[in-house]
Length: 246
Image (cartoon, rainbow, N blue to C red; front, side, top):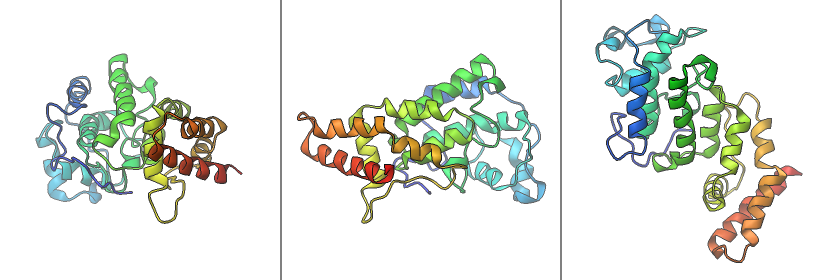
């Protein structure tokens, strides 16, 4: 799903004050990579972009260059050096509120097994792990994106699905209710949103309809200290969960 961007930078850059700024600077440092092969099909990129691609350095790759690179068919498997070159810029584009790929945010990190720590040094993985956790928690600052799309993006890139769902489950319940209500209930026909980019949608379905999550949302709805507006939203969310769990 194409994002309705909140604070998107037109050039896909993050500035000082952005919650991802320091982390992105670290990413450029630890993933410093000299120009290498493009890693994509020669005929799929605009010739002028392909010719000029390595003339800007990692940090200054134009947004439309990255999007054209993502549009092109990728080599399988993609060489690590090719992915390292575009990776920090891809992270920055995501943090800026733009999408690296016009296909969908879900494919942004999947051209190489980015979420497998065995592919990276401890310093590199520390940056990727911190980015994943920070982005999953705070993506709503720059995107009006569905939560499931973000979970799928990281799962498709090799992060452990169970860990991603655990992180979401541990959100403050108010934040979780607000997000799920926006994703599922703020429409004429409420429905649990699961993106089509999942190779198998059983995992997200099982999580969204799990007994533990239903109990968490229901308990919040029935808590006398919960504001009435949020209680109503929690009830709407839990009702959907119960319908789909049967």
